[in-house]
Length: 314
Image (cartoon, rainbow, N blue to C red):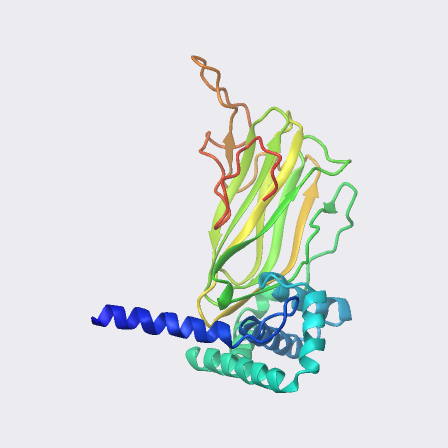
């Protein structure tokens, strides 16, 4: 048996051994998945404990824990049911907790320092840009926050590439020319992020903006919609690429809709306009406050393309 075959055989044996170690029954989170989940929850709880002013309520503390569970594909009910089973199988539970501690310790070693201290340092370095909080807007009205997902997300290295996606029909009081601003506070920890904010109109056209970012602190992404077109759909994502043994936080996410303002109508960062596909032999026409026509909006990492006229959700 040559060297490559030996390596492959050893890898297969390791995989079989890892699977064989899972003793939890169906409906209970397996040990091999429970340990990484508990490790991520431990890191999230440490962050919460070191920032009590940001997580003053039970709901805010639970929200960040639920965001970790969502990234692992686990519901709160599944987690609590699994904890109940592990509580009646203490020997297995002890092994899982020991493995979770090892995972956290390895992450800290690879980062060459305590993660909590590193977060404190980065927060202190960016205190000026982080200071204070943004106004909280109601869900309806001339200025409204239409974000409908958890406002705080913890993103760990085990998640790798992915996206926080959103896809919303316009609210009943939306109007032509509304402006949308996606804003949040980012603790990037050197990880790469990118943002897509887009609207589809009833006539099949699309306006969108797409930007990359790894900045710390508050970020604002603005999309000015066309005052001559009716909005059918508001969608996009906050894409991320998290390095191994790293953690980033996206806090205080809001998607603010404001009314048409003629003074600021032509003031925004670069955005694009995608016209309807022309009929055979006819050129496309573009009449929009956006810049030159563009190709289709970028897609969220690991997801299918987003055609401008589609009712499929992200």
